[in-house]
Length: 155
Image (cartoon, rainbow, N blue to C red; front, side):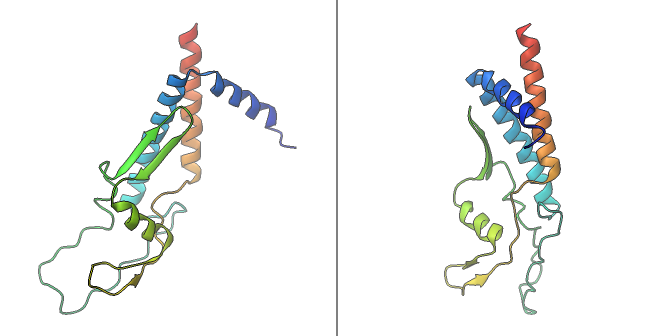
């Protein structure tokens, strides 16, 4: 049996005792903080486990001159495409719109066509979203902070 089972039960009861608007506010705060964390990690070009992303494939020698390539996923990590949502029962981070397909291809390392007339390409897995130990710790701290604020606002 888990030594923390009584503690987990008490914590679940405290969270359930929050009003729906309090749970929604807590979930949206958690989602926003996690989105910021994911954006920083994607900017540093690292997977959730800390390993660097696989490098881009080498471009042909006779490619266009003067073309400057941005870092991978520069626009994808913006808040326009990476959405944070919170409801009274969940906190979610997701890619919105047409970029979902591209994000899924890179997340799992699938095959896709880069252009309408091009051949299908096998992409290496570059996990965009995921949890690490620090993310879990941050979620725990935010839950405790919201419970603490809720407890003191009732007094």
